[in-house]
Length: 257
Image (cartoon, rainbow, N blue to C red):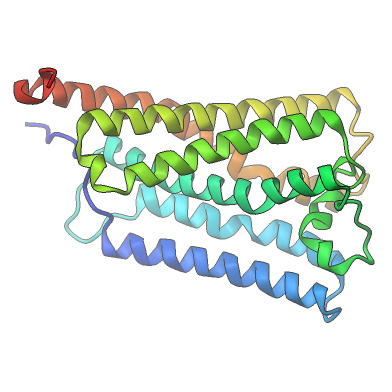
């Protein structure tokens, strides 16, 4: 008989260690680059290309661990794997929006984001702006897209926090959290599609026309946001369906209180 999926199960210690290691590696990479460039110890470029290419590795490692890395003796269903991968992605994308897009959104309004290679403490935003110069010269359409991205990021952060509290064991609350995260990820992916379509329509005129700028920053740096939602978005209805089926099998839970 097929085992019922348990979407409230705790993360296995082996995967928790991988997630922590990936997070620490990302933070160290970002801080070394930021402080190194800020104190003029490291050159802003090609540091931007190296960081843009390497930073996606721990992201993919965490996502891969969520799906493929079972603990010894552990046997997870696909829905359980999808549930853990979803939570990992909620956190990853939320951190990105809060630490990069949100400060840029505020800084752009204040006129602070017009960086050059000589503005070393602005490297955190300049490193991507050399591939998309709209981030360095301001663009109202881009600002509107990023505003929507921030809303999506905050929704995924809210959903993640709800899923990490005891409320996740309440089936109804779990379902609500997943719907919130679904709308957040869907909003972010819609913005991403608009972003690339607008770039294609503009013939990439606002992009740095070098192989490194176009490939490393404009595409590789965005790979997690291109690929992960293709798994997360369709998996959320699967999780919700599993929870509704569980709710239906428990009459005491399915009745309105």
